Amino acid sequence: MRKCRWLQAAAVIVFACFLYWESVQNDMIARRFEEEIDACLKDGCLPIAVLSQETGAYAYVGQPALWAAQYAVDQVNREGGVNGCKVRLVTADTGSEKSRALSLYQGAGRKCCIVLGPTDAPETAWISQNADADDHTVHIAAYSYRESREKRAPYGISYMSDSEDGELEAVRVFAKENPDIRDVVLFSMSSDEAKNSSARQFQELQGELGLHFLDVIDVSPDAQESDYRQYAIRALNQKADGYVFLLGSRDYAEILKELRSHGIEEGRRITASFSAFNQETMEIAQEALDGTYIWNKIDPYYEGENWQKLREAYGAAGYEESQISQPVADYYDAVMAICQCYEVFGMTSENYVDFRGEEQIAEWFYDSGEMEGIQGAYCWQEGQKMSEYQFFVFDGTVPVNLRYQN
Image (tube, rainbow, N blue to C red; front, side, top):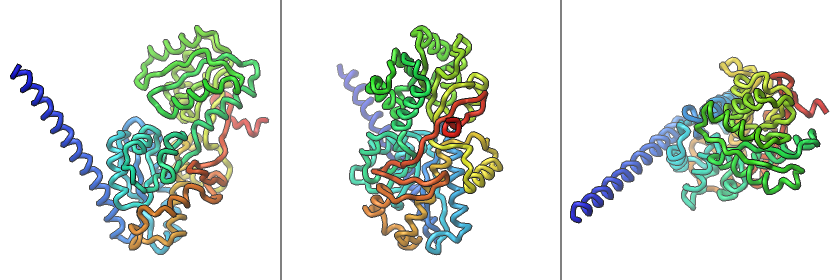
């Protein structure tokens, strides 16, 4: 009995030491980021703190987004900066880890009135759930679904339009374009809060959409080739009219290939989420994309002059011009909006910290006036970025905007 009690006490001590060490590590991460921001201010520059995903699961969107933020800063500095100060990105890699993202956010919040990033919903949700209740840092991040955004109102600002609204509108377009499609299978991922929320919404509104969801297939974030085959077979066994995907690029492309190889000849029976709209999807799925639908929050082929200049610079940086990821446009817009905010409120490196926690800064973003973005006008309404959604159908491997087809 004494030995058992001793072992239990030892386990408690070890666990307490682990928690203490983790707390120390998190505080060190926060303090290092805080010191970098402080150094920026001492150099006479206005900081834009960015929680980036340069490594980890979300690096494929984090790296291009960070490039776009730096591109925007370069444009501003080329025009003389803001209020006599140069603007500087102060970035830190979350490694796509939620706890690290929270620590970096807390460090930035000790100096900054605004923090940009992360690019992904899971890290953003973690910050919104675990940040101090009295935290008044304006957080421009992936508040892409209403529940998380409202929890941080008015300080949680979405850098992109609401995913749930876009997903819903995309399925409406899909159903309208294909009135004979009624019974569908939905592929989603319960581990992703945004995708899971959209999946629930589809099921609740299936009557309104004119669709009947025969099955919701939950795809594992660690799925392998054999799993993709099983997901496809399960869907095929439902004898559905169509298939709706709320998945990322690789998962969607692999399951799409399986469906096509097992006899789904008409691409029009398949529609995918904006999260699958990137180069990886094109490289994996290739001709299997022909005739399928996909939606996005930007049009990679937008003809505006500033967008074309950005595309050219993007290609020169080694990225694929034709498949610019959505956060590129949104991070560019966010940085430009932050700089405009700095200018409106007269911020400089000397008075910057005086604006921490100012509700008027949050209000300026939360319900903004119309702004000119990299792909046309947009605004924020109740913290959500409002801009047009884009819908495409593939001609071979080329996505063609339905706006110019109809």
